[in-house]
Length: 449
Image (cartoon, rainbow, N blue to C red; front, top):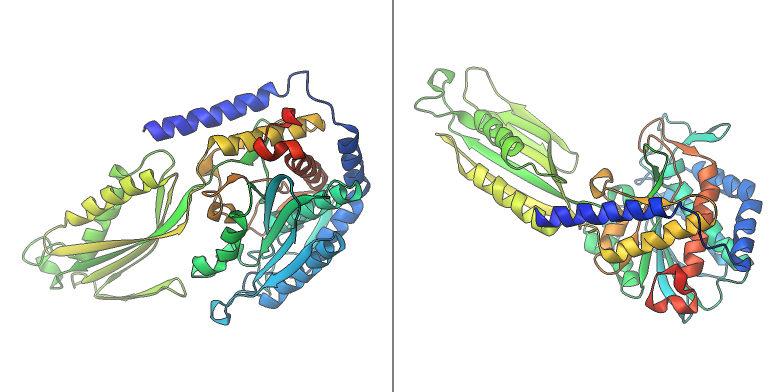
């Protein structure tokens, strides 16, 4: 409870700080920053053209050729900006395209790691339109999740290059090819990302931005971890007339008891646990690779087995441990004639809300305000799903949600606010500029510049 109270207080303070930043007295942009903003605005049409070019290439996670094609398109952009680029291939058995990495080396300011991804949830043959523009709204495959964010990275760096602000900076960019369905083992698919993080000071991730109900732009200072669980339930088969008696309650009643007890006894703020697949009967089988299950049973036979697969999302490891202990205790309280076991598997680590993350948010919000784009607040950790930034957040100060703004991500209605590309590029470029100045090596406070 104490940990959740502290996190809530930290987020509240961040939002209050963003609101305070809207008051008069903001720092003006210096001449170089003014040139950065002008360069981004001048290229807004070309930025949208680059986005369209990338979106018109299907890059569903399993479409490895398409992912590599988008990677080639963006690699050409980084090459033109003077970055050293490479393509990281993953082992063939992982059935993933690989990742694009672009780097430059210097010795001033903070060392930055910028994250994006090339893949989308829309595989070849999807009925979702590739690109449809209606005024300031653009509908299409991955326009906001997250090719819009990738373009923001490129355009921010392009503007910095144009004004000479990339000189002597250390920046690594990694656009993964399998963020929507990360390849396993993740120690391999995210190993190079972790290695880059260990040589960096701050990670900035460009998943889609969120505008809250009051119209305030936000960024992400925390994300919940993800894990999976598997519940295997056994019952004593027999004639249905003996249920509740000599043969006990059977596997299906036991499964229902366990799930209902989870619902009543395990819940706490920030924690969710969802049973996404259940099969039960006389014979049950689960196909983990295909996320499918089959069952055979008759109404006059007590169920001999049940399988349930679910996910678990938590704010930090202490919350995970509490939840798993409660779930284990519930599973152990079997009904007569039944038994069950539960297994847990961690997936994405938590991105904890830390003072360092909030400090980066403060710098980002000030940059936004100084550019006349208003303050930026914090998104509650439970409002975001899993993301690549979580693999590096335990190692360094991190901020996510710096990408494009849109609606309906992962759905047929995924769309984009076209103006958010320009706004996102301005905010990102100013933040990168300030973090990479010589005086920023010891602080993210823009007042130190």
